[in-house]
Image 1 (cartoon, rainbow, N blue to C red):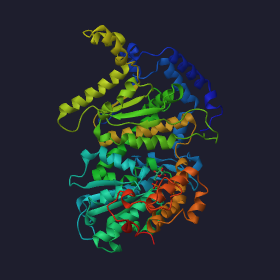
Image 2: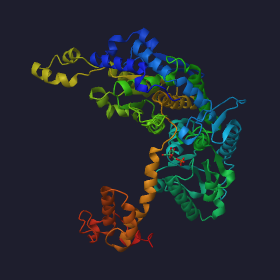
Image 3: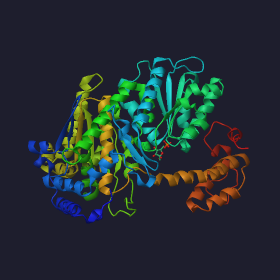
Image 4: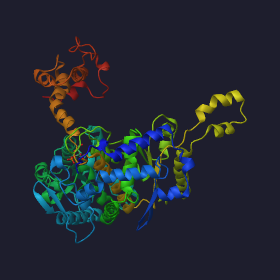
Length: 612
Ligand SMILES: O=P(O)(O)OC[C@H]1O[C@](O)(CO)[C@@H](O)[C@@H]1O
């Protein structure tokens, strides 16, 4: 939804600017305002079928007035309208002419009709979704039960998902998050994403081609990294299995919107799991891209994950008009308050749940690829800050690494703490330790430690020492955090948590009037990587083979479109490969002693074989 009045000109925005200025002048002391009423006002408990899902946002730098102002901003920016249009299937991804209907993938109403509008008109998407879910059930049951056999009639022991970005982060996070519900027969899951061949090599060292299933996950089936890894995996499979091309069908399946690309790669169309252009890559783990999750935890658990996400979708839609009742909108508004009015640059995600170790990385894509935009829906440059820098690590590890900066550094870092009320693994005494650390950190961030407390703690020290140490030991306190406590990490709760963050991102995009569903910013680098490849090949292969002088004319022509630094780095790489001095341009063609050239066990000649 585009806005008539520029965002920063809205009276609702200006009121928040004023409130922030006041707060900066007279900082809020969170401890002194904390009362049971405040907790009631600033917390929400969702009644999930597995128990209450608590979001306590009372330890944030908001009072009733700011909260009302944030609610008015949500109204003025028509967040509810954008949300309804998005979940209703309109082509909200305007720059690509598509809907963004990942919520349909987890629609659990057997009679639902959900239409996605796009360039080709509006289609009911539910029949296709149900067909793919049925295909996933059939396939995963065959693999998990051992009915699916490899080329030498053996059952599968390992699954290797090859994909990147949205075709990797969601499944990799989910398989780790739901490890407790993993295959009882010991099916092992592996994820290869990086084009660095080390990623592939280290996984292939662990698996047996006769019992390995490769999943090639790529929405477009054109992504350089994924296709390079997929080709290398296929070559490795053919070489090490001793089987012919026909065996590929038993060991390779694909998840994609690009049927032709899959077929050209040699995937049997029967082994392709389809999805659609109205599913954004970073929102795709709820459908075919979740195949590795379903293989690992089984289709029943996978569908429980969908149920959990759908629970959050319904909550979002039902409460979107009531900012104080709607969990994703609460998180979005808090983020906007810190990001746009209190100048916070980053937002920490701190799961006190080892199973959620990959959640911060997943949310980096979900949030930063979505809201890392500086042009609004009307094509104008924005004059306000958009997406935050998302980062984090599981507690308690983070406490012993970067929490110092959150407690006593100079930056404002709003934090989300996530914790399960109940643990899954014994010894349960350790879960108590985990929870006490979670509570202690949120309380310590809020309460801080005053000078009087610090001095009282050191009352037995000589006065001079006490005076010297006191300033270092004072904690300002009033550092904001939101506590999210779910009953226990089940597939349902996990689905709800992830959907909650997806919707937070959408609500923020609506306020900022940006499109969270495209990612043009990453395209430029992709194109340049392809452009520069011949230059790198020249530097690595030609130089290694011939120890020749400067960059070849063809590469040199390409490099003319680039800068001196890029060309210099390439010359450096070329010099290393040709054994010439890396630093002196005059010595670009000179041989260096072999021992000073490259750290490698392999003789130089062997490394040149690929060039000819
Ligand atoms: O699934 P694909 O088409 O291989 O794309 C992988 C990833 O690349 C991106 O397009 C850009 O990094 C992501 O949005 C996407 O998840």
